[in-house]
Length: 133
Image 1 (cartoon, one colour):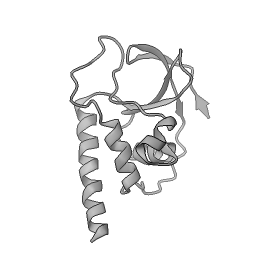
Image 2 (image 1 turned 60 degrees about the horizontal axis):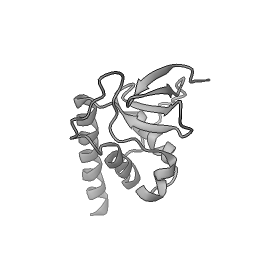
Image 3 (image 1 turned 45 degrees about the vertical axis):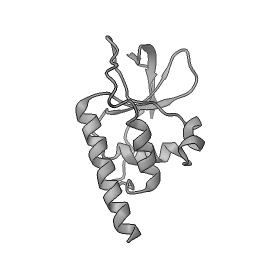
Image 4 (image 1 turned 90 degrees about the horizontal axis):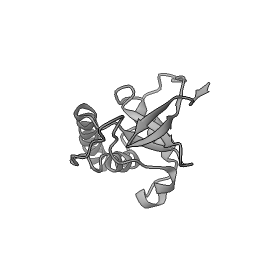
């Protein structure tokens, strides 16, 4: 069941949040791939920026399916689903500003979320290195 009626201020714009009741099947996350690594790197852009909106939620870099060719991946939403399986609840948002048509993915700009993604990035790098040997 899809719900996206709630609006909230995200990155200074009144936005609609998309969420869906979990349909998780307890399948192990498939995050140890180069494509997921690319998505994490994109989500972490601006992690060192001091910008924080005075009201509402501030996210790190946001990405959309339009960014797939630039990032060098296909099916961004599938990578997001895998990341959602392990990232702290509600850290990764799917939203769109009411004045825009494209849904975006972004991680809430909080030190604990940044650390989680940085640690995950290191784990993925180690796993990929092992696989290549």
